[in-house]
Length: 298
Image 1 (cartoon, rainbow, N blue to C red):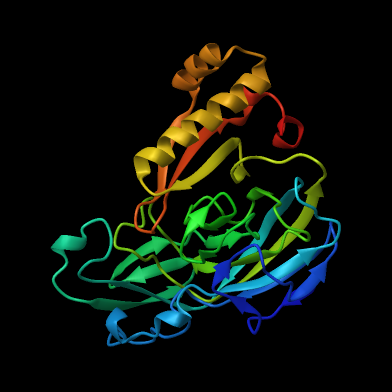
Image 2 (image 1 turned 90 degrees about the vertical axis):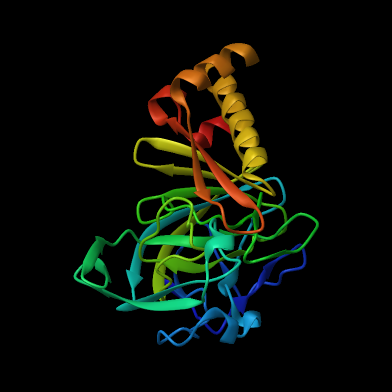
């Protein structure tokens, strides 16, 4: 297993990314991931106005995957996430879903121990997840704080150990980078951050040649999620519905109208995050309804 050091960091996904290292399909990689604040929030006095925003949302990488070409799919299986023993969360005026109601900037240090995140005397079970994970884009630059069809800051809490994410490859090598690990986060990430924490992330990478999804697709347990990130949550929900309907149409050999009816019966529309420049929606499809693995349906 190769280690991707924290010294290799990017702050944007673009069509001009250069690999920090190369890997082979079938290889396991360990990413050293720094927290979303770039290590700047260590006490309750380290509120957002005092931070260097050029260091926000670092993603470790990128890793070039040998043989990956435009039109392929990069498969990333999340095997393990090892968390540091302390995380942090911030909020303040202009931040999050209730931006206009926040009166002051606040930072809070959250101990992470014995598989719990401690919020004062309340303990929440850890649910390790990757907030930022993606590949090089086709034709423009997205800061690591923004998500789109390349992935990026999707802040989807199901992207954790045991999950597999399928990314459309737009550039030679794919160029995988990840960071912004959370020890726990609720759907929406409503205050603008979660329990932001340093971590070591172990993944397994592979390829599907000559076929790819339009948006990242996530498999975990008995569920498949289509992840869509667009400027408004309404746009994201509509596109996620469209993509789920198309996938059902292919999987079940249905007309578009029949597939839309099946989506109304079986697909759950959910929100990943509401606080980044592009909002992320997820359409959950039971794997049994699709009846075939994603690798066969692309």
